Image (cartoon, rainbow, N blue to C red; front, side, top):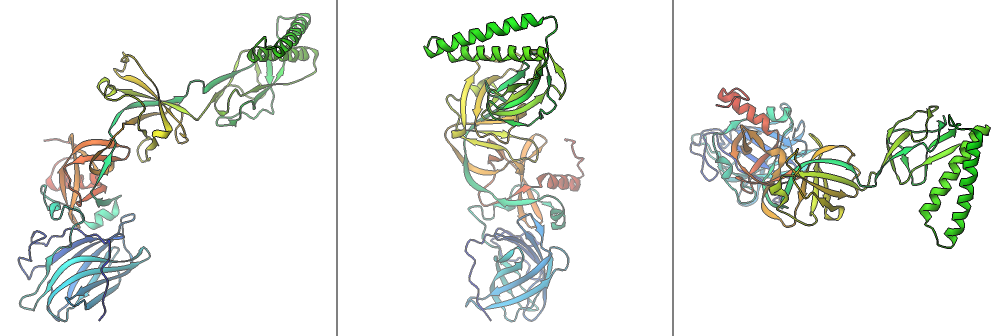
Length: 500
């Protein structure tokens, strides 16, 4: 005999006997099989067992699920432990799975009476002891079974058995599809307004680079989409060529005049009589004409087209060796940070808030986590003074910093988070299923039984939703709910997608 210490923090929820008793009832028919469902931090236990009698073997088909990934436990040791009022234990060990996820444990009690039931699981996923309620061991004539189910987490003990006709969804089905459950818990979300959005470069964060003269793109120029360039860095090298329709004398005269003007402006700049911008334009003009004059002379100098700001090449419009005319577009440069997010809000939503948002959430598409930005990363740039005639929405521009995961030109759904919070039950958005226009979740009544529960959505923030209709401490399906809905439709004979 040995003693075990109760597991602090181990969590467990309701279980039902096969005859449909509630969690507070004793077994109505002592000779009936019984079942119990319980949860720890690492494993879920769903045990279906025969009646318990002194000296007789009761087989417990114990389904063990690894909660991380919701996979069937294939290798490990599962032990059923009976603990009497003195703390003495009887252990019944099963080191091999009957098949993936199912361990057939033979329980042969030596004494009658009431016992606490604990399942201990040892595997590569960790060792954990999971309290699983209280059982009665009887005699051959009057065998026992489950007396009380394990206490539910939170405040919703016994509530999972309510809400409608349960749907059967076997462990073997759960293990074959993406599936998961979790405790419904209280939390808080910020209120928000949402609408369609498009991501674009901030004002001044996009530039088309053009050829300053007639020339040929130097073959050594390495220009490609995604190329990162620094401010002032060379993007394209051009080898000048003589412009058609202009004589050598004309180009030489223009070059001499531009050089003289540059010299005068340099003197004026030293006396603070002209701006640096005007001096820079004169310097660029003089350099361009000198390069063109060199091209006519055949000296072969090159001219660099540089980046006005640090960024990335978004579009390439020429290829190496191509001849280009003065003013021709060479490449488009964008600044990836900061970005602007243009959000279209319904007029009534746009009127509900003012000032800087408390955050921004960008939904990036199915299977991708949302991009979440806090108040430090966002700034309200502007809000349109009128409703767009084509969309019926109020255009709002939000500047986002640190937006490495966003791409210019992306269309998305955006949520503007507002100051303040709203408390309630928070579940993953994936928990909610649209059932003929009605939002529903599935609550786990026991290991293979689920109850449809209609809910009301009170708010949304990224991948989480604030709902009404579920109690804290109920076990909610967080992944795979559509599979349960299909199973319910098949069992009722309803054709999927057809509303009666």
